[in-house]
Length: 152
Image (cartoon, rainbow, N blue to C red; front, side, top):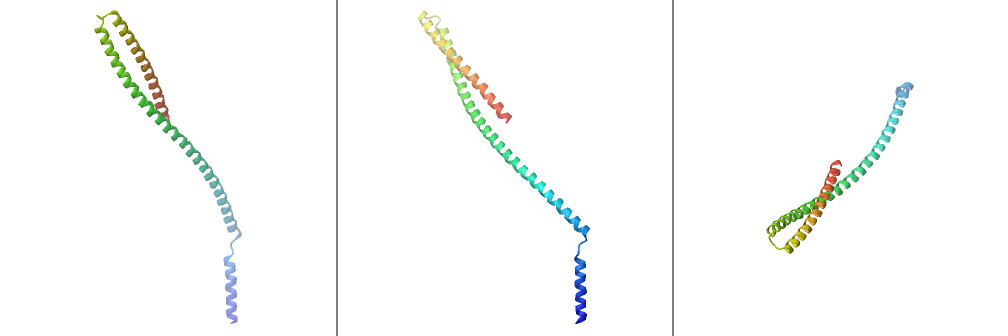
C-alpha cells in the first residue's frame, strides 16, 4: 500500500511539472493574443466604417433611382407632347398647303374674296408659326431631358 502511495505521489508530481508552461511560451501566447485583439478591434472599426459607407451609397442610389424615374416620366410626357405637336404641325401644314392652293385658284376671284382668304391665310400662318415654335421648344426640352438621363 505504501508502494502504491509512493507511485501515486510520483505520478502527481510528474503531472504538475509536465503541465507547467515556460514563461517565454506564455509570453509569446499573451503577445499573440494581444495582437489578435488589436487586429480584431481594427477590423471591427473598419467593418463599422464600411457599413456606414454602404448605407450612404444605398441612400445615394435611392436618390439617383428616383431622379432617373422622374426623368423617364418627364421624357415620356415630353415625347408624347412632341408627337402630338408634330401631328398638329403636319395637319396645319397640310391645311396651309390647301389654303395656298385655294388662294391661287381664287386669284381670279373678287378683291373681297382675296382679302378674306389672305386674312385667313395670315391667321393660319401665325398659328402655324406658333405651333412650330412650341414644337421646337418641346424638342429642345426633350433633348435636355435625354441628356440628363444619359448622364445618370
